[in-house]
Length: 334
Image (tube, rainbow, N blue to C red):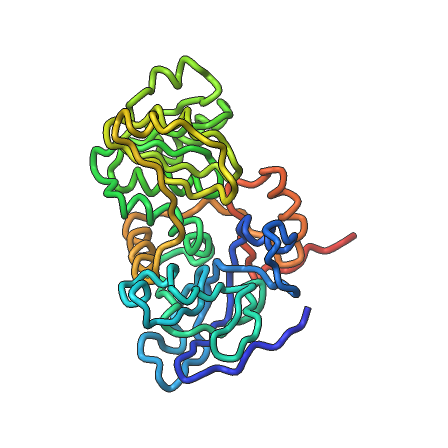
């Protein structure tokens, strides 16, 4: 597909894309699973590349910088949410990196499955020196989606944290919580994932289909990061929270089954949700990952294997994120 980017504005940065992560959200938008896709969809909101041009009002970035772009490319920058660094909750609605509507000209935004992108400078993050740029891209979605709730709810040295679901989000949750000093337990339906979870940094593993293991873990955790991507009963996990414990949902965007309020009231528990962070927190996350050497587990593919990657995503056949490497040549066909 060939399409034109908008002309750069005075506060824009032009980026030559080197890597673009593949998120399950891309698949949902391409298939219109959420009934709000605007075609043609050019997905990709996990973007890493090199600055090739800057507008005359840009001071934060220079030509040659290695930079990254996540799930949003603009917001009103005037409402209380934007002014406090939470652009994702912009009261006028943040502009998605793709499938969004440009606030200036009303055009449809198109994402990172492309050779370059034009982005308002405020929404461009710096990639710290020395990072492996091939593995940075998924941090801009899976990384910040899991970092933000861990950070906002005070996970630290000695916290007892459970991560539910070992996938693209869950494996980052394990890595980040462990790097924050927490005692991390992976909760999974698949016993065979236990060894992998420990390799990623988990101290313990609970198989949620084993009633005895779940009962033994009652009231154990301060914080549960729930990354299950589909509607599910949260009651068994609520019972694992101790007094004043919190469970945060980051995976499921769906109508959830009801639960009995006694599971909250009886131990002063709370359940909430979390989106990506704002731009300041996203930069903080990148700096944290650089300092701690934290990266997602990635499989590199050339651009022409995106459809195959989508089919594999539907089967959960990836460990744990696909990244399009723009420099990879398409495999020869014999």
